[in-house]
Length: 166
Length: 463
Image 1: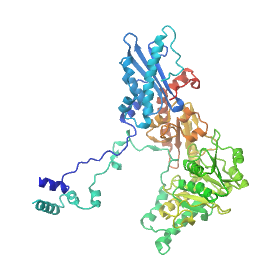
Image 2: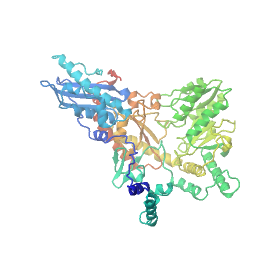
Image 3: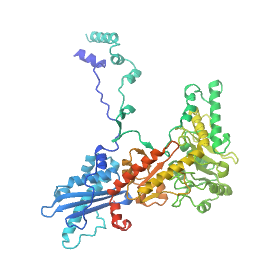
Image 4: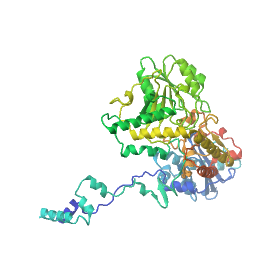
């Protein structure tokens, strides 16, 4: 035991290299991946009654997201989703992740998706948290639009030009 | 018993030193600790290898094309050659009066001073070396106003100045001075009549930069100088981006103070100069106190190698100015034509006539600047968009131009320099076009425009 103590004292035990990584990653790999290979970019027909469109953000802030969901009327399940975004890499990644997560889920379930979950999945730095907020708003706006369309069954859907308020 | 074990271990270590040097060194000083330490992640070898470069989550196959000369420039090899002897053999302090090292160093500094002065048609006695254009701007703005603080309480500057000038003015405002920030037109040029009417009897300084670092517009220096001469107001200009690129003449422009930077003209970083007129004499309060070097304006040892580098860079610039200008103008045309041929919705920010050719600031409609930069990893350019700054505000220069908020978010600044080649420009065009097209596919605004909806008529939900 003393021998072990001596060895440690004299620094003979190989030191583990426990230097923490110092390079600050600006973009998480997932963000870069979503940017280079975005999933579900596209558009559905706005006037289709099974489609809900959420348009949030403002060009003045530098972020605009359009998220569209196609809902199966019988089951209330989201069968398809697509998006288009004007914004930075984090915004594109957030909306891309949002479309991936809403597919195949029930509408009520999707309303529980929080921006913190998206931010955690993409390791967004604090300055980019508003991108995930916008993605959450876009999901809610799309659902709201679909409900509004269904509520006004027979008439045309609510005017899409007016952006939904979150 | 413990001490005996300790002693035996020590003996073991000392005797087997050749076999395990690290263990031996465990007992010695910090110097050995450095030798023993494994290379830290910060060292170059960690992110550059034969397969390419991996840094900050980005993988690219080689070093990017450098099109950001407004940020800094590579050092010209001729300049480096001039500097090296002053690091290795002629390393004296130029203020040492008693030996050869000091004398030869001083001679080199004076030669560099003359080289810098020749480029702006000034006398060497009017040049003071500083640590950069930021320091020169600080001395000019704060130094002159503090000197004349009893009589002069007003400063005039523009909204598109460099941050160091604007921050110095803000500092003066906090001390109780008045500052007028002149607006600029949509072409980036100030209105001379507004300048004339803004001058008051107690105006102590007019500060207008010669070439803007973000948009590259050239202000009407001679006219401004004429106005300042008539009204007897000192005229300061930040010529960091203009030196060696457009012809500068302190007599013709009637400038009292001029800030110059070394690393924008293919010289070393960490050095700059300040031109201070002697007839009529301009006086400033020094911002660096000490032994009274540089005529008491800027105390501190003058860094001989850096200053020699700046002098050499100025001399090279004087010889190459015309050739560079022709070449860079041609490259700028190539870049602009290449992009316009394949894309629509491209806007040049700032005046097209009164601009320096090596600075091209473009806005691509319906595409956001930071996402474009993310895709342009193989080209080193910079953007005035919000996401590249910490706040959500777009660049203040673009806002001062009156650029619409959504277009201000999309700007990219291309810098073309002495060492930029045609192949680099072509590749930059190709990459830009490809990225913009891809992002426009993803953009809801572009889709709306294609459908014929007027974006300006939409009511957006603000956060």
